[in-house]
Image 1 (spheres, helix red, strand yellow):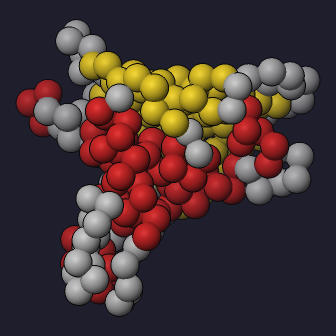
Image 2 (cartoon, one colour; image 1 turned 30 degrees about the horizontal axis):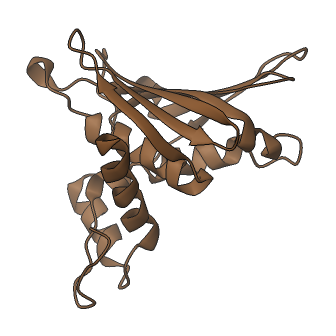
Length: 196
């Protein structure tokens, strides 16, 4: 995966579907006050839509968003396990001097989520405790973002997402004539973290 022909570019529409979520995660840490929280993330929960007949459905997207976080934040994979009861994945990473636990959990949803993700929650270690949550709102085609900082009232806002069909997603991908190096790094991370 790390070596590919210079003549071939590849991509994934699931990766493209996650672009709005990646942007929302980045926005959680935009302020100078919250930016240092990136180094203190200790717990992540990714809830992805279980496919029809109990299939994994959004598992690939859940692993992609996890791989994106891990590759961007320099986390080193240390463990991977799958629950036989519900198919949930537990991934352990080393980040600086502490461990980061990521739970990727399939969930039933009342209405399909265009991204395949139902929610993403990130929590910090240490003081002050900070929690960031992104929750899919299919009824309004949006995502509710909630930030909780110890000792302050929670901050919430809903971002409306543009829903693109397969044709629109493919058109977006065809606009870029170069390789997506970040996507390639994320795929390499997904391979490493699921083999850990």
